[in-house]
Length: 431
Image 1 (cartoon, rainbow, N blue to C red):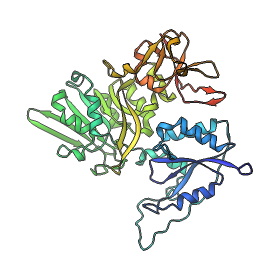
Image 2: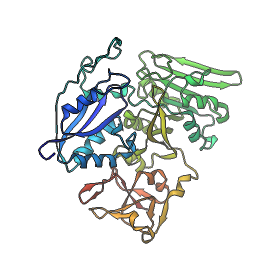
Image 3: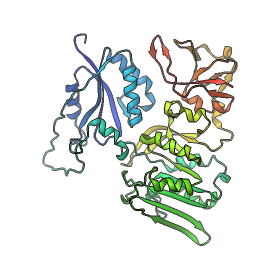
Image 4: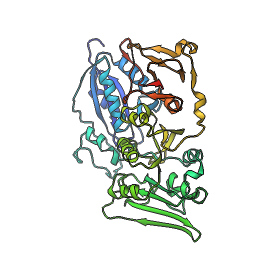
């Protein structure tokens, strides 16, 4: 190994919602290995999204597994959840590692895949035909199914049932990142739309508005054309009205969607696409409307979102959600959490916080990094420390900011032990 170069790579198959992060001493051979694998379809083609040279690939691989453990599909595999933000996190983490030498730029044409005695109709143009590089494809994933995850009805029901019904009374609920709605068929309606339709009278809703995005993969086969669905239920019965505005995309930031958000909506409840979460959070929070949305569990310690938590514009909801349905109707594990600006009462997760004097915290759960900053682990929180200290995302989700503590910085805190990077955290301080 001493005489060979060492590489870390990120590779992805076309039309996949995951990527693979691995190590090799021969990038060309490794890509050929991927493209020679047998499986359901030999038409699957892998391409590199990122490659770099490192001094110790095993060390980097282990560091990646530790840092991004919650985004690995299986702990024994190299499969990681993929979206634009996470891909950038993977690359930035690899480049910040002490073993990183340089990014490599290689062009390897994957071998053509041949099927015997069967001609498979070509339904998707290649990257080359679309004028895209692998990086360009990554940046356009928001228009693909790569991060389209559909929430299950049970998860919607579990979360919404935690809130006082008076919150919804006489309100217009807007699902602005939804899919099809069919009042006669639950299977052809999104979980959000179906829940609010089924509980319309019980919650005392005034109106339900759902947008259907034309650019996404259509899980419910409702047709590709974007529309806005208006649902109201009166003493005269149910009323479903669909509008198909000219040049309307159905996206949450389409001018027509923004008009509905501004002029009609009272509460927004949906599951926005992970790849556009930064834009979505900015849109919904600046609108000043109440919201209850699902998003990546790590957002609470992600620099792009921390300022919202710091400024008390958003906080964790009640429940974590780990399983979603993808456009192929398969269950996929994606760690996410409910986030809201609706008041939380009697948060059950408070019980997980152990707020006690520093001296009573077990030694293994109070460590100091290279900068002498205290890292409190396992939900232990010192109640007599005046200086800022670091905590994990779980502590924020468990409601520590509602227990007399505040965030100190608008960015993620990255601790180092003996100059080696550890899990990302945030700095908090007792008020």
